[in-house]
Length: 385
Image (tube, one colour):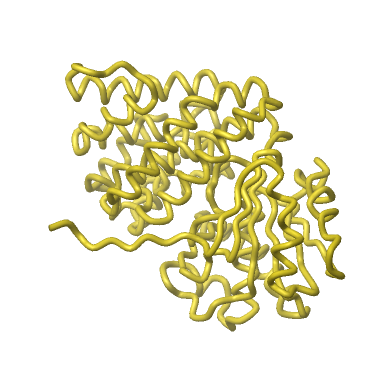
């Protein structure tokens, strides 16, 4: 008999072209009277925030806005957002933007009802009470944060990123509209798209994978592999944007239930120490981690090569699995994503500290398809340098 599995998603997911226009109805159904939008500068400058707020017509809903002006949110950013929510009588929060804005909205929502500081909420199931209702609207096709119970924050003093993981970080409603992603710059399309690809791939081979997450992850791989080049070359192609949005959504759902592994564990220290974006860190490290993982899940990696459209029928499993790695490297080259640590300013002398920090990411490493020692983690960084 198979293992018992639990599958979770937000209460409601709305997706499709112009689905952002449903926000007004959703807020009315919630009985919201005062709403805080949490977004970022890119979304604000692109006019997306104004377009979404213009839909609030049916009810007299007061709306205020908090714009996150940094890159990836820090623990201090989260404390500040939480203080704003605690001091005001908001009925609902709406996070709109990339993963940073969405994660910030998640943490701010639970800070309304929990007295703990953000640092104490880090880790698994350290959030006692559900927070304010919140709605999440991604403007990138990448992080999948709108459908996960995770929020990732940077802790600058520790030079590391930490995750807050709790069922209370699932939103009430996720609205996934590919039209909100059309204005993404090419480099953001590349990095966030490959981030979603990593989510699908790692969750497919994770120790906590299940038959249901596998189905969803494979479809995510198929959609992303088939559309990321076109979305990168022609951002106005709404069909490609639609495929990418759905691919990211499915990858996020798979990630939320099966988890990810060593790619993320090794990527977090790069973000914490050198400010490298999450998508670039994951993408760069992916082929090098796969070289270590490939023997533990050879058949599944071969299946992913087929999902990417490769003609692997009759091919030995290891040959097909290695073809997957080769095609991933082709993607990275096409999308102009660096493939070496030295190309993003990481000195070789930093590798011992990076490896030590990565080895402490036990939540992620324990879900990797094979165990990695400190020596093996160091070797992966050295290979990637």
